[in-house]
Amino acid sequence: MPVPPSARPNSAGGQHPIPSTMMAVTSRRYGDADALGLESVPVPTPAPGELLVRVMASSANALDWHLVTGTPLFVRLVMGLRTPKRLIPGADIAGIVEAVGPDVAGFDRGDRVFGESAGGGFAEFATIRAALVVPLPPSVDFVAAGATPVAGLTALQALRTHGALKKGDRVLINGAAGGVGTFAIQIARALGAAEITAVCSAGNAEQARVLGATRVIDYRREDYITVGGRYDVVLDMQGNRTAAQIRSILAPGARFVAVSGPMTNRWLGPVLHLFRMGVALRWADASFHQFTAAANADDLNYLGELLTTGQLVPAVERTVGLDGAAAAIAQIASGHGAGKIAVVPSAPGVPAAPAEPSEPSR
Ligand SMILES: NC(=O)c1ccc[n+]([C@@H]2O[C@H](COP(=O)([O-])OP(=O)(O)OC[C@H]3O[C@@H](n4cnc5c(N)ncnc54)[C@H](OP(=O)(O)O)[C@@H]3O)[C@@H](O)[C@H]2O)c1
Image (cartoon, rainbow, N blue to C red; front, side):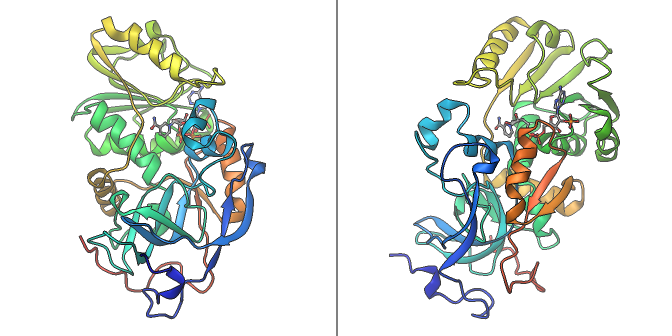
């Protein structure tokens, strides 16, 4: 039987006992971001295999928007048919372990950790499966760590796992100004790409260059299909081109990685578009990859290394409290989220970062 967290002293030697309730952003019905509430709810108890984490930072992702709106509609088969099964959105979690559930090894109270959950991060405390978090390197701050998991893992798995990016490759990133895109530019550089072409609007061009893009194409003035260039890896976040157009910019043996597509179908979202792209590119001298990013310790640790060395600096556009989470999700819904918006719950009485961070314990 897990001991209720309210019965336990926390890592700070009981100076900040875990309360029985906490403030959280709640999603009690499907709808736009304004359907979200901010209310007091019970602090969760970690189940076997889980940790209770005091959330120091999270961030908004397109994934949260899908959870809040319940779109495309097929996701409700998993997320809840009539109302969201997950009360609290927020997939990114960076914070301090406050309680360790049964059957968890390698973590202690007081450990600084970061990782990805199915939700729960827009709250002062969250439970998360221990397999989906790793120790946070001591020099990495919570806001950077809380902005990284979903978007960083997606960019890393798109470029390294599926794109098989190797040193000297020419890379094009369509949708380079958003959460995933800003990580992808930096990860492409860290993996040794020779040329990084970023497709974004003019207002985000300078940011793309600072992050490592060697060429920026403003999609409002130029078409990346006709402007000239062939690529070894194309990472597409938009799905706004036909297979024939994409084929025309792929170098022999290239990898085309689609992480998303147009939400034109209410029921299936981008699924049909991605299926058609896969079929149409089957006969090209290139491979097609479509995937859903998933957290694993190896990739999270790699992102932690890049954060430590400064090769990865999350493009945090602004930091908001829990009361700003709905607006952050609304910005993503607009299709023009610039970089990341961090969400910091600021639990009362707890410093923004521990003075002496505990050493990673595994
Ligand atoms: N498969 C997976 O596992 C996975 C994981 C994470 C995300 N995703 C998907 O990947 C997509 C991107 O996610 P995100 O977090 O990066 O979203 P985001 O932060 O909302 O960024 C979207 C970006 O798209 C850019 N954009 C809009 N119209 C464009 C156009 N015509 N051409 C090029 N860029 C354009 C915007 O840049 P400007 O402001 O410059 O216009 C904006 O920065 C979403 O659809 C999300 O659902 C999939």
